[in-house]
Amino acid sequence: MRLTTLDISIIAIYLLLMLGIGWQLRKKAGKSKDHYLMGGKKLPWYLLGLSDASDMFDISGTMWMVALCFVYGMKSIWIPWLWPVFNQVILMMFLSKWLRRSNATTGAEWLATRFGESGPAVRASHNVVVAFALISCLGFLAYGFVGLGKFIEIFVPWSEVKDYVPFTVAPQYVAHFYGIVFTLFATFYSILGGMHSIVLGDLIKYLIMTVACVAIGVIAARHLQHQSLSVPEGWLTPFFSWKLDLDWSHTIPAVDNKIAEDGFGLFGLFFMMMLFKGVFASLAGPAPNYDMQKILSTRSPKEASKMSGFVSIVLLPVRYTMIIGLTVLGLLYYQELNLASPTGVDFERILPAVINGYLPAGILGLALTGLLGAFMGTFSGTLNAAQAYIVNDIYVKYLDPQASTRKVMRMNYTAGILVVTIGIILGFFAKNVNSVLMWIVGALYGGYIAANLLKWYWWRFNASGFFWGMMSGIIAALIFPYVFEGQPLYNWPLLFLISLAGSIFGTYLAAPTESRVLQHFYVTVKPWGFWKPVLLEVRKTDPEFQPNRHFGRDMFNVVLGIIGQLCLTILPMYLVLWMKFPLLITAGILLLVVLILHRTWWKKLED
Image (cartoon, rainbow, N blue to C red; front, side):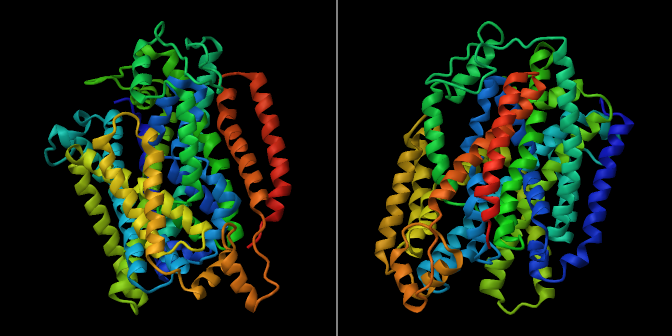
């Protein structure tokens, strides 16, 4: 075990600090349901944005991104558009303030502001969102739990620990044991302190992670000063043509196999499909998870926009400093890394292998503490979202609408313990249910986009359309793996069209949403899109009402924001790689984007 006393002390102090935060903030969180789930909607936007960014800095995602950077080099900055990462830009420019204007507590509660509160279709749409949210949360908790355990197992071998544990753990469950230990720490502070402790914990974790990431970047840059990278032509540029054209056969032939397995050889086609999906997914708004909860927890619509913009600023430069730093060290010392697995070379092992082999004492402890905190932040944010849906959209809505604050808090604690328990149980069976659970979660996301896109921009879309759009997309996504082979992204247009057809068909199966509900939504949220019939009704009572005419400005700002986001991503990569001219060009573009957005976005912000 390479961990020194200093490294272990850093980790231990962090864990004890998290426990203290949860205990200290329990009374503040217990004042009301809103205080517990949303920080009383009084937390400043920059803290919520930093917390949201911290929740996105997870272990498994970072391991994947280091592997991408190793294989695809600068071109790897495009692949996270699969999520898509630029959804934060669209949230920043207009969707966050639209969402926050509803003043809802969860995504399911938000539906009442759009479709009304009664009727079979409204209940069905509400239930399908709650189911979507809970299954997604449970899936992420289960796999985060196992991923953390396997990560810790690399640095703390069971042979070093077993003599201090008063019971025996079978080898196949060592990762689960570690997962349970650290999950309990995250559970304690997040259940007791609610959103208050989650945000404060994320702040501390972010500061630790920033120090670790900068240190890794500096170490990698110093190693690179006296050596050179053996990479194929095209690895050092983010630009690409129709084909990827990265030939690793003369350096690391196993990488060519990885590219073939990923299905990214026709990179131009892959990029087009990724962009097509990403635009629609972003315009649909955030999925009902911790990201949506942070937006709904802001103090005002204006602060919701600021928060979403702040996420990219605090997340991308820090995260990519670590990613490129670990990639450089992995390339320089590839022959010394043990990346072998039963199925071949596992490039996702680069992150733990480099951290374990090339970071000095103290920095190793900070890096492990930061990554451990990344798990705990993602875990606690996901847990908070699951609690919100169980308490607000099941218990209070259906079982006890007049529940006292004491009852609601008791239910929050119960729901938290229940969700964690189920997540751990699923984690124990992860090897057996992996394909099934990922299949379900993937299907839910496949059915999410079309229905959630139309709800913002088309007045005639109703609860029936929402339900049938979600269900048709989910059912199609469940069937597709048996019908189509290869990269699932290439089948997405057909999935989208099926879900879109279900949405339109379902819409015309039922009458339009009540005019009263539509008018209130339109006046309150102020979306642009196809709302003319509602606008005419609003003007009958308020002739002076002005619609949202900022579509062009918002789209202009989105394009600028995406360019700025790419600059934030690639800037630390050029810095660590000592690529001075591209660094200066990128910094200049970023400065220009900031100056323009200050006039076209920041000064135009409104509640």
